[in-house]
Amino acid sequence: GQQLNQSPQSMFIQEGEDVSMNCTSSSIFNTWLWYKQDPGEGPVLLIALYKAGELTSNGRLTAQFGITRKDSFLNISASIPSDVGIYFCAGYKRGSNYKLTFGKGTLLTVNP
Amino acid sequence: DTGVSQNPRHKITKRGQNVTFRCDPISEHNRLYWYRQTLGQGPEFLTYFQNEAQLEKSRLLSDRFSAERPKGSFSTLEIQRTEQGDSAMYLCASSRTDGTEAFFGQGTRLTVV
Image 1 (cartoon, one colour):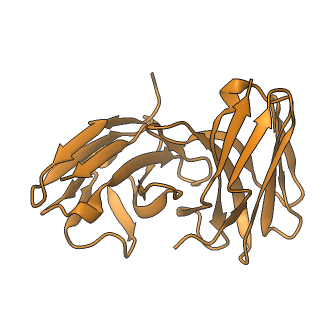
Image 2 (cartoon, rainbow over the protein chains, first blue to last red):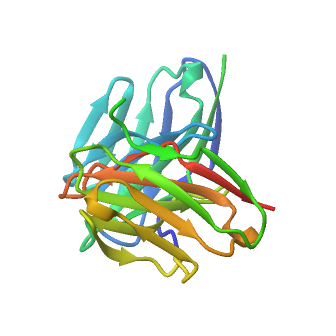
């Protein structure tokens, strides 16, 4: 079963606000990935993180690989309506470079 | 379009029927993965291939499920004697050999009635 705790489960924000979400685990992860999924579509890769402490940006998105290697964070700045969707954290546990473990997702709603 | 391609996008089948899904990975990717996603959950790992070899199968993959990747290119996932509990989104992903960035297809939504 899934072993990543993702929070919050859902968020309702106003356009222009910043958003933060996180993912934690009791296990050590070697890689963290953040995906966005729209209804009826597959997940789209947003950011990949490979080193503890790493901070990586992709446009208005910034993600960090926690120094304990057991957590990761995603921030979205100046949200826009097209940011609506479900955001998933995922990672490769230490010792497994082929099987992604996913969180349950954070549903983001942006009010224009 | 050089992304991961899955067909069909949607499949409705009667309980007890067999279904087969196809995945075409990104051409230079050696690894291919199948995941299953149910409503309100993140994707769950089913199986993966390194070229044509199937190297790992999840306990979620009952004996009614079989996956192949002949010649190390496209892959098929077959479900025999479908059950209502098989209703889900079936996702295919591919990556390079080092298995880091996995790119997903658009998925096949299976509904068993």
